[in-house]
Image (cartoon, rainbow, N blue to C red):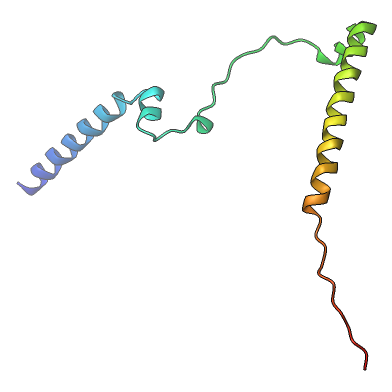
Length: 103
């Protein structure tokens, strides 16, 4: 009788587990329940396979495009240098002056 009960319990467990596996939650449900985070879910898609070594996008730039890119870079560097100049006076550590008296 015990063997029959054990066998029946195993079959019930097997049925329950197979049902759980067949009713898996979707990715959206897992994200909604905060089980699966965005950075843990990666969707892989196919991309066209071609030789990227021959592609040189900088060779397609016109002189006007190059001048515009240089102007934007110069503006960014100017702003960066200006901010660094402003921060230097505030963030530089100056140790307090110590007065040493010689007797």
